[in-house]
Length: 97
Image (cartoon, rainbow, N blue to C red):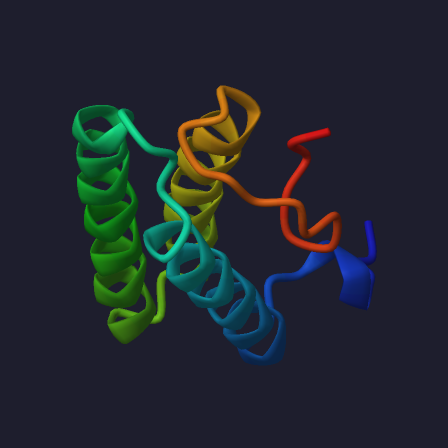
């Protein structure tokens, strides 16, 4: 079985996912819905931990677990957006609508 390029996690692909995750993280940090600070704090903590894990795995050249960690981070981000914990409307970054 031949592995196709789109079936691999490349450094470039991982770098792109890090960039998107960081952009989304910065946007949610700056757009916490009033009265939702406690929930936002918990989500931000989880997102930051998963991004930290992703960087650790990347440093070990373990791109599968790095990408998996970023996927978990983004899941938390999107969950907060869907639940209106973050007041975001960027359809490029979020599935909030």
